[in-house]
Image 1: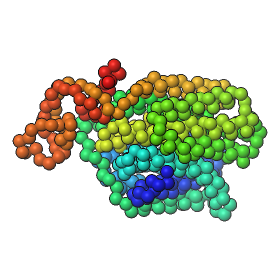
Image 2: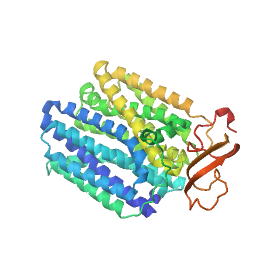
Image 3: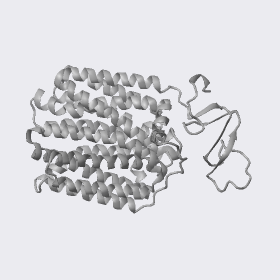
Length: 461
């Protein structure tokens, strides 16, 4: 896995990601302390509202990113967003009212909702080899898990010698370093994208590709399973450990780290597994493992049992999330990657917005035992839907038929465009009226301008 860091461009982007993640982790702790300073006993309400605002920003902004990001230079876009995020976190220590926190959190996460899909869509253009890309995905998953484990401990150590306001400044510095790493390398430009008429069609372009692709409909269901399990762990761990088991803050931290440990273990092992096994059984197994961990919570486990459940839950979540980039890369044309990664970002966070609300409301109104069962049922149902939506037989190359069509769009002379020219059309890619005759052929199939619908299963051969 570490060998992929030999690629200079990816290495710079990876460390930019890691440094930005560490800074964000420090700000997460600082934000909780800032909310307590401003709101006292209502700090939980402030943080809950801020979390909801974060998810709304993610869900609403990401599709807009997919519509327009390909028109902007990637490197300058990433650098500008890092600098904007640095400016926003520098403003957080200056707030005096709760509404100011909400405004800055929205701006910060609007920038993140733009940065993350563009960053994720850039990596497959840098690492075109699938084995390298798989290892990069595992390394990225490992970085997220290490941040979840280490950032709270680093923040606690720093708070012994400085005030929490300084953590925001350190986060801003992390974003500036991330920007300097991004600007130090040349990034591949986005592929030329056909101009799509109408704002709504541009905004929904990635969503249409996503929802018309069977394997991605299965991925969406698995996103729901991940969010159901993750919301139970994130929202209710502190209640389980402090209120039900009567333990202290150290045990809360250990319980949180168990999920990260399970995820890290899978991230380390998964590249070798995916060399031998396709993604579908691996990701469905992850869904079953998460549902099982939630159902076992119904037994009212001891602290050691809870750690074991969260370890299983984290491992299952990593089995789903680590191969996700491979599915997205495989399911679109290169020029559509920003839109499709943005669709995944938006849809997956829609699931989190739903399940965060469910985990909190059910825990308070029905009890944690019942919440384990209901969220476990949601995770298992979602995994079953994924199994139905994602066909067992999922070849990359599909034989299919084309109806005759005449149209005009930006194109290269590929297997779909073998036609004569009169000399005025100009260099490729170019646009002119052309006709496609009826025919059938076989190639790697994705939803695009020439393939508006997925072939029926009985036609696959």
